[in-house]
Length: 322
Image (cartoon, rainbow, N blue to C red; front, side, top):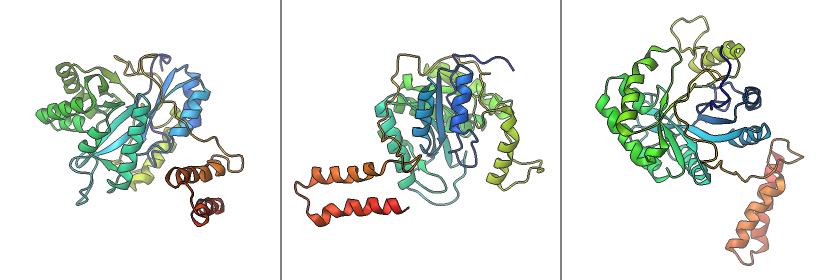
């Protein structure tokens, strides 16, 4: 394997918070990126931000610029419609996003929360109208094979691919929407590359190359493959089942034509969050759970009664007992 390019940035990365899909432990992921001398690294788990804070802290501790993102599930219609099957690549599509500033991070939180609270049907889903309302500060990508534009190209729906690209350009702006090229030795990926490059030229979009990273070291391929079998209900010896190639791991083998986050030109979101508590390693300090509702009470009620004041304590006490 050729030596890693220290200027290369992984923009499409799944940790083990992409449940039964990603196998990158955040500590191992950031450790490996540090060993390779990488200056930046993204996290784009499927449909959630569960690992965002741990990733942010781990990356900063290694001197790595953390890029907070998510690979959302995009419904082909309204996220509120919940009928029939929900198949990836047919009725729901992947959509890779990165936050380029604090507004983008806050909008990413809103999109993910809404997807779970209002759009959940098989998967936590968003839709184009919701995306358009919360697109400020976000960078979007054409994405992997399971994304909308690649699926149109894969099925020779070139005009639909153009319309979808135009809609995303309208939502994100030309400077914040990137054509993403992936080549893991998969025939379908190679089929759509010419179409993606044509769209980039037609719409004046920059192009990035990415690995669809799901594990850190080559030696992790076997255990990741076993995990995929659990996800799909398959057996390892089954010939016709979902498999990943050996290129779905962290490294520096790709070429990056354009950089969506050039050093010094976009701000890393500075995420404020409570420090971890001594009594609950990995958790939020209990006094922070008290302060939040108490502060909110004071803002809303000038002199809250004793009965009202006792409720936050009861709630925090319930948290203590968990």
